[in-house]
Image 1 (tube, rainbow over the protein chains, first blue to last red):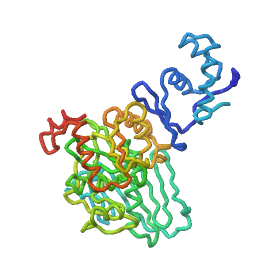
Image 2 (cartoon, helix red, strand yellow; image 1 turned 135 degrees about the vertical axis):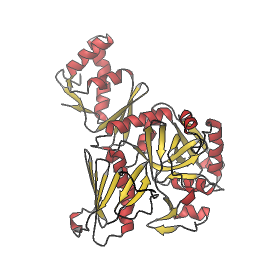
Image 3 (cartoon, one colour; image 1 turned 90 degrees about the vertical axis):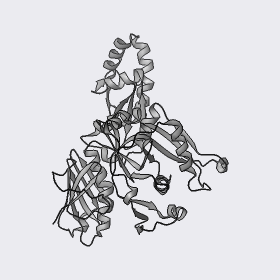
Image 4 (cartoon, one colour; image 1 turned 30 degrees about the vertical axis):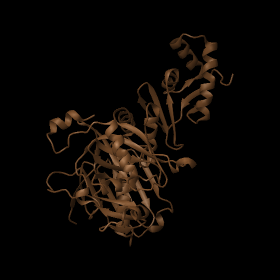
Length: 92
Length: 321
């Protein structure tokens, strides 16, 4: 597991976002990069509006999507790593 | 100093300096939307760093251009200029109507695109694209055909009660010298910095026009492009808003801006209500007007004409997208 339960996760500052149809569009002015988030990715991003621990994030997604914590963690980790690599997520 | 009144971006502008780039506002009555104050010249050129330094805070934008001036924009309605001693006034205006006006548009929650716009029977058409893609050249070709220009370099899109509109701006436009070598040099134009400045006169459209489409110009650099025809590809989904954001004027000015959320919401509205298309052109078309012919027929295929703005305003409002 890449993230400990008490790892704190938050959005990086200076990202701009807007809602287009069913997608959340993110813009990083410094990187000149654009991202479209749909479905569960959008729910995760919404939760990250205020900093949460990895445990809290899994807990909320388990309730929202009615999946097992194991399945949720397995699906969530690659996505969070991707967000971190793209410089969108602050991991402490 | 006496005030001059101008009309640009849908704003009444009172300026303490002559601005031949802007259309004059007839009738000085009423309070202005924007005032441009010229402060005493400063000699402290050494205080300005070598590179253009800009600072964005909520409601305040500062820009210092070495050898030219210091600018301050407040709350989308007040511009202060401190020209440096011996700075040529043309250069002071160059940054005023570029970067500084761009920052003011952000403060007012408008969506400034980096490109040129023309008025057509189908509505306002904007051309954006990377430097050298041919935005101004294409606008000049349309102008040559008798279309009226709305703006050059900075196109302000506003969400109004009548729908999305382009707010016309400059009464002159700047174009690369090589573009005019193909069109024939303009009689009234003069050379300034690296571009011709052409007064628009009757070739300029003074009123807002409903926005119909944004065209991202691309040069087809494939080796087989010698005989390939231009292409018009309408975008959908996420691509639309990405292309709009990529072509924002000086996007770094949006950082720290109070109106960020408004500008970003406007991006989504434009993506949904206007057409965003990629236009691929050949690197060296045999005829200068080739792309104009191509776009005229593409527009006729894709869009319905709108009634002209001079007609009954009720009809005009109904036809707005």
